Every structure is written in C-alpha cells, then in structure tokens.
Amino acid sequence: MSSPPIQWYPGHIAKAEQQLKRNLDKVDLVIEVRDARIPLATGHPHLNRWINGKQHLLVINRRDMVTSEARVAWEAWFKARGQRTVWCDAKAGTGVKQVQQAAIRAGDQLNERRRNRGMRPRPVRALTLGFPNVGKSALINRLVKQKVVASARRAGVTRTLRWVRLGQDLDLLDAPGVLPPRLDDQQAALHLALCDDIGQAAYDGELVAQAFLNLLKGLQPQEASGASLELLESRYGVPFAGATQDPAFWLEAVAERHTSGDTARMAQRLLDDFRKSALGSIALELPLA
Image (spheres, rainbow, N blue to C red):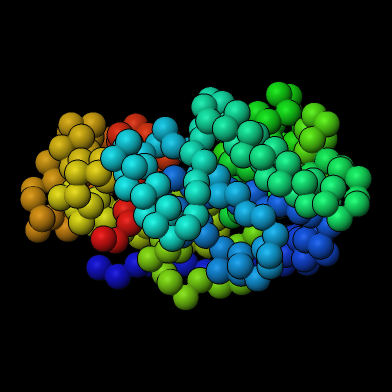
C-alpha cells in the first residue's frame, strides 16, 4: 500500500519562513529541534542554506518515545556524519541541561573569536527552529524555567518570533514551525502526519491510520523499532492475523468492537494512542546501515 496523499502549505507557514529569513543574519547559533520518532522526516531540506556557516546544534526531542536501541543507532549514525546530537524530553525536562550546556559552549567559542578580534564578548543569539509541534516552545520554557512561550501538542501554535533572555550568556529566538512548501517524499509526509507534526487538514485520518498499520507490520522484525503487533492486538482485542491482514478490515473489526462501527473515530483513537505512547515506544524511522 502506497502512502496516502498528504499536502499542505498554510499561509502562516509561508509568513513564518519570510520572518525566519529576515532574522537569520542576526543569530550566531541555530538550535534545530527534531522528533526522535522521525529524525529524518523532521529535518528541513533548506536547513544547510539557512545555517550558512553558523554554528549548528541538533537537539532530538521526545527521546522517551523511542527505544534506547533506536537512540543509540541514531546517535552513531549522526556521529558518523560529523553531527553531534543532544537528546532530550522537553516535556519532562530530561536532557534539557545538556542542551543549555551545549549552547553555552558554542557561545564560549564564538566569544573567544570575538576577543581575538578585539571585540567585546556578548550574549550568544540563538535561533530555535524546526517543524511545527516538535517541541521547540516546550524546550525554551524548560530552558528558562518558566512558561514564556505558548506551547501545545498541536501544530502551528507559535506564530510570531520573539526573543527570550536565558541567563547572561544566551538570547533565544523562538521561531514558528516551518514546513517545506511541499514534500516530494510522501513517506516522510506520512511520518509527519502520524507524529502530529502537520495539521489534520492535510490528510485523511482513516487512510493514515491504515498506512500506520502497514508501517508497524514492516517495522516489527526490527527489534530497535519497538513496534509490536501483539501489543496492538492485546490493547484492542482483535487479532491482526499475520502479514496478510488488510489494515482496512482490521480497522473495521476494531471499530465494531470499540466505536460502534465508526471507523473514522477508531482511526483517530489509534493515532492518538500512538501519539501518547500507549502502543509502546515506537521509532518510525531507523538509520539505514
């Protein structure tokens, strides 16, 4: 089954990209935030153009939502490409101190260069960027230890850019989530839909839920993914009947049992359960060897 068609380009994201470009030359450090379940799909194709020689800190949020094996595999994969990663759970605060320390270290290097040129040190200006709903605002609130920016588990809450002072060393600019104008890779678009990193208007919930079931089938043989059809069967009380089961039939059978035959409501429940880790810690993407 191919990925269901997913397309978007809300006006506020076009506006956000324009704002972002205007502010990029004011910053020294780009703190990019990605989703641990889909670290490739949440990498923006224009990122290298935006960084353009600036320091880059890659923060992978929601570390609690994937297996430790997946995390170790991704850390090694990024390291082999010369990219250090800092993993955190912005919601619980795990790993946030390491993010702050890495940002301040980057700032120390920058100020050392300023001193060598006879310039005075100053707070580092850092921009946090990433796809909508990957947890940028939650991370900033953790970093400054108070709720200074709006944060919610839905795409598109941050709409304007704002500066936040973090101690004496760091000024943070929280940017609205920026999606590429279109995604040619529909598998990546599916991953974004599953992780609630794009708005629901961009896709059909039932088709995405069926594609999710197919994805789980493919991931289950890879232990690091954490995908388990057994957990799915025990939670909803309907056997998946091996690799030949049609996801549409399974969804109908589960809907009969749980939502009076309403497959749209059942599809939404399945997606919600995945998004809150009720189906276990599942990495939708694993690095290729």
